[in-house]
Image 1: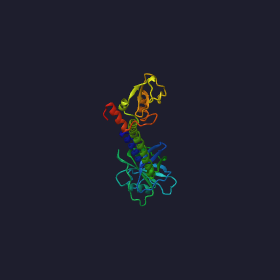
Image 2 (image 1 turned 90 degrees about the horizontal axis):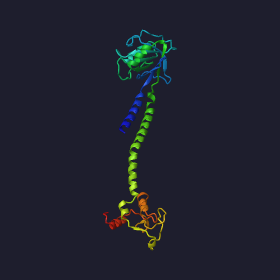
Image 3 (image 1 turned 180 degrees about the vertical axis):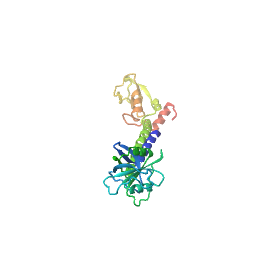
Image 4 (image 1 turned 45 degrees about the horizontal axis):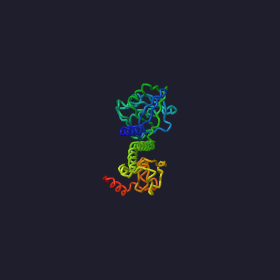
Length: 291
């Protein structure tokens, strides 16, 4: 059960972590990479933004870019690829914006580091900016072809995080509920069955203490006014052992034993309850057993 719970929690955490990731796609190679948007930069709209990917010159974009584009060329969207380091994120984004780029992708300069949000002063920032890992940035750099290739930045799903988080929590609760039911309920059911079975049967010692006699049709008396067993509906035969209940009704010994241990604690004829304390005391005293 612990292993199952751990797997559920792990899957849940993975789904929540993925909520903070957006996607950068490089066409026509169809490479996709997770990214984090810059804080206070312009948000990408629902349809995302696609344009030509250019490697910034200089690569760190800590100074004015040499590959500049006129601001009147608004028809073509261009995205700058920049490496992290040497200067604040804000300087890089502003230099890319001043060079005529509509968006900037900054990639890490070190391996195996978590993605970070780029913090900056929002004043005057009009372009989109995202941060990707070093391996992602190196692949983008290798395949950047300027106007010949297309790179897309799609909207982060973080705006729906609370909705998806609520659904994930609800799903987790449902899974945990089913696990609890699967592991706990059977134990209680078995315990209830055992208790219920005991309450619906007569103690074997009581059965052994009931008086018995051998039936002979020639010895019928006024107290033996029935010649048929009310349980199996078979006529009594000479030599058969009958057992008498405290209510004075007699039955085949095997029939009444089976009835009182499997089907109920009462007489099949008059519904006399065999589980009363009085009956137990009387039978135990007659048989010499301790109650």
